[in-house]
Image (cartoon, rainbow, N blue to C red):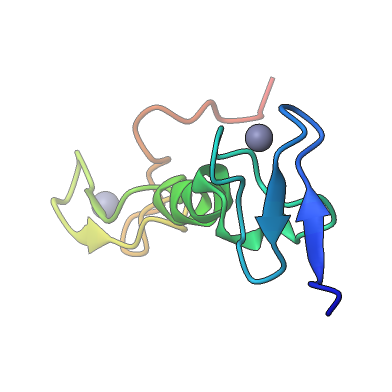
Amino acid sequence: FAVKGWTCNVCLVSNKDDAEKCVACAEPKPGLKKSTSKSAGGDSLQSIFKKPSGNWDCDVCLVPNKGDVTKCIACETPRPGTQPSSS
Ligand SMILES: [Zn+2]
Ligand SMILES: [Zn+2]
């Protein structure tokens, strides 16, 4: 009977069709979607942590402000670290 399978294009070893990677060199099966590769999950996690971190406290009135506001909600003092665009 004809066994379905695939041939590793690195070491040319014959592998079973249900093997997701080469039994000899662990090369992924050709044509297999690389959704389970190591770098796939890392990117989405990084983008989450790239968000501006948290709240900040106004230097003038000490009111806590959200991370996405650029000036104090109470006294409109610009957020420390941001350059006011008035010149
Ligand atoms: Zn191989
Ligand atoms: Zn303030």
